[in-house]
Image (tube, rainbow, N blue to C red; front, top):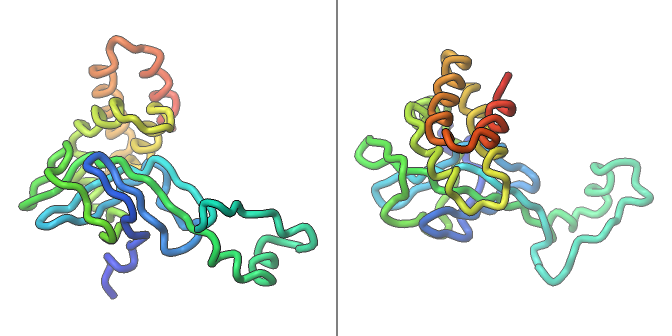
Length: 199
């Protein structure tokens, strides 16, 4: 079986040079906050960091209503009202942090955004390791306009990436040193991130 198919988590439904929104194929089956995902454009793979996830009604004019008062569990609720899952959708947003072209990884914005309906995949371990050999993408995260606090996002990214490293501690120390350089004038932000990546 194709491993990319196993790792496919959604499809691009909104796209911009700086990021994209993907709809999940399964309700509430999101990539982790700070996870590295990828999609494709002609001749290139585009890398994104997941920074937000939502589940809501397909029709924005109709809000979901509580229906489980007489049910014993959430599973029972979905079983007795199977139409609920058809009326809801789960989406996640990813901030573009780089791309790969001609077997070379670039940690800055790609020339073009991802096309609508591009498939989105979780990056496999080897690709996460390859991407995380450089910490240049941290500049993009620190200067992004995401609604989540930057410190929370960066800490989540580094925790996720550390899980696939051969030496998790050495990776986090290197990341901390890089952050200390770029946040030398903002000790409070640096301390917040370091506290959140301490394992």
